[in-house]
Amino acid sequence: MTPTGHLDTEACYRAVTSRDRRFDGVFYTAVRTTGIYCRPSCPARTPASANVSFHPTAASAQSAGYRACKRCLPDATPGSPEWDVAADVAGRAMRLIADGLVDREGVGGLAERVGYTPRHLGRLLSQELGAAPLALARARRAQTARVLIESTDLPITDVAFAAGFASVRQFNETVREVYEASPTQLRGATRRTPGRSTATGAANLSMRLAVRTPFAGRRLLDFLAHHLVPGVEVAGRGWYARTLDLPHGPGTVRLELDDVVASSGTGFVLAEFALHDLRDTAAAVERVRRLLDADCDPVAIDEQLGADPVLGELVRATPGLRVPGQVDGDETAVRTVIGQQVSVTGARTVGGRIVAEHGRAVVAPVAGLTHLFPDAATLAAVDPASLPMPRARGRALVGLATALAEGTVVLDRGPDRDDVRRGLLALPGIGPWTADYVAMRALGHPDVFLPTDLAVRRVLTDLAGSAGTTPDPERWRPWRSYALMHLWNTLMPETPPSEGDLTCGP
Image (cartoon, rainbow, N blue to C red; front, side, top):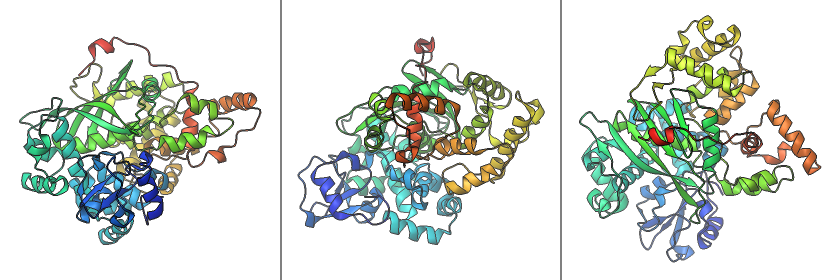
């Protein structure tokens, strides 16, 4: 069963009958007799098969005239994991739409990013996802608006623009059509957390970000804390924070990260955002969800990898382990080059020096966050000899930054992954390990393996001896990135307590 292309109606109905939560966000069930659409796990009485149709996206169901179920809130599910597995045009377009690209650059900008004409892209998305780009963007705006209405005290007018709507009238009409309720009615008696906005359009927002469960939040935190760059990131026991370089200005986010095992199949991560401009709300949320790998299917991954004789014990020990994503693909690539052939501690030190010298200073509500990571254009203008690293690696870093600044290499998940990899390998000083690591972290590739990584080879040798069998990474497809994380996880130290636990809260 796949969220793109033609859905298998019999398989979909079986999932609905069993209320299988693994398919929430993968497809949606529209009920003709009620005029509503639901997630597969909706607790309401299962409708007769003759009365239902299935849609690959919420936008498809909305375009067909269905309203969102008020009981199961189908638009609140994580996105489909298949968008990163297949990484086809439809999936890449959905990632960019979720980032707010259509709101900022229109359908023409989206089409240019994925390499198609607007007309052809519209036809393709209508065929694959059941809705055209504008309808998909509208559904995303409606979802963001509902979350802000129900979870914050932001004024309704501010919610409209934070969600990406061009006018309050458009916002009101969309909310009424999608949810059969006005924004005021949606707000109702829902318990909300403070959301403060100012006359300049800045805001502090507290939101719950949906993730599929199980979610190994503690080990994700350990990875992020172990690799953090001073000035850009800080962490303590149970939390992680960083600066965000967003389309309309800087921002920060502070995440509460813990293990989540929810019987509902969907858990939540508390995120505290401080945004310079409310219009960046959707982009900030989507980029942090990418960092969390929120859309992955941990049940399917753990079932396959857990059955492997070499990996099984590791998977059972840490269910729901994530591949840490990124909030900025360019930053991830530059940091990967900085870390070539040096220890993690060394990479953190060098990264911090580069940030202090070339990053843009910001005033942040979290102590220790002082700068945005320097953008590609800034690093492209740096003399390689002035960088705190060997001359050859400095030239590689500046060459990469130049390619990113000029658009020769684009890491926003829009282009085809194979094209991006070829573009990276064409740059001096960028080898297969670097290109593949960037694909895994920056492009969300779930099937990357790094056979030349010394730590991986060492762990595999030890595991093979214990299991009495030879590891076969081919058996781990299409989840080799997660297999890689399980191997690295055996070497990852826990996040130590810090003074920040007491002083760095926003």
